[in-house]
Length: 395
Ligand SMILES: Cc1cc2nc3c(=O)[nH]c(=O)nc-3n(C[C@H](O)[C@H](O)[C@H](O)COP(=O)(O)OP(=O)(O)OC[C@H]3O[C@@H](n4cnc5c(N)ncnc54)[C@H](O)[C@@H]3O)c2cc1C
Image (tube, rainbow, N blue to C red; front, side):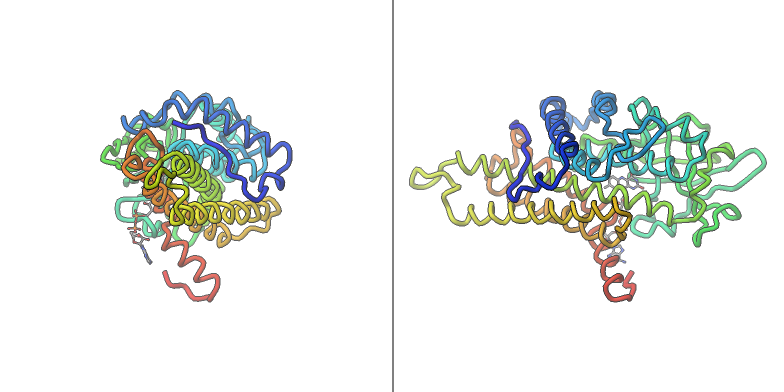
């Protein structure tokens, strides 16, 4: 499988600092050396390549934009660039990083007690510990406010009952950040707050979800809570503002996903370009000489370039404290749909070879079918932006 490369038609990298360019290039080199040789087999075997976890920890990718407690303290553009190059390798690796960094380390960092931060963050930053984030339930996906998982406060601790579904890293996680309704504790509108549930807590079990055509190199699981007793000190104290806290985590993750999708799109575009220059059909000419193929390549490069600049600008707004959730909705929605479209076109350009695991395009295409659904479906981001523009909620 060919190495991943940076697509840089309009000198996007000239807008990055030297440190950001260094991070971009070192992540690319890491993916080419450590990920590309194993990722296709991992996908075909439905195996999470957990041997990469300490390596991504050592590279300083985990919790990249967080400060203190052993976290790397990079800026958000660097976090984005890391995600872009990880997903050029495979969405599973970027998903692992998004969950660990934005959905586990971020809530601990933002809403946790000092004791919780000290206990968990340094080990999550090195990859010694893995975390997962349980929000979605079997009957509540796009509308998490309807969740039925419930924590009852007792003298001994919180008794948790319910189930979460489609949870990335679930079965391999040392700890789960679990969102539940908890009357009398949460001040938020929907009584929702978050708890740290550690592996081996009695009443907590996980079930691996195996029937997947997408994100096959990622672990996806159910989390089951049956009278699961959680110590009082495992409530995240800052999470009692309700669903608002969960949405802050999702916003951080969604920005990383927007960057990641550009990486998947670059990998598909480069593969299609290379292939079209060498594949000969009709009149001894490469298929790249045909106008219809050239149009496809031009459309791909144009969309990738537009996404790079928009996403960089929105991430700079994030760094300046000016970003709105709707900005992030726009890039998450646009970039994932853009990448999915490019992966499908690339698949077609490769003809029958497009379905072969010798090339990465079908793998990216299948992965992106999950990426367009999780962290707010395409429709949910349309409704978020529609409400912002018109002032009318269509949810
Ligand atoms: C591989 C994978 C990993 C995941 N990892 C995690 C994780 O780590 N943690 C976690 O908590 N969750 C995770 N999820 C769950 C994911 O966030 C949900 O699947 C997502 O929120 C959508 O929920 P749903 O699947 O229940 O779809 P539904 O909410 O049932 O939606 C079904 C369809 O209806 C549409 N729809 C719903 N409401 C409206 C509306 N008002 N208007 C128009 N259309 C609407 C949706 O856009 C969608 O097309 C993961 C999912 C996948 C596939």
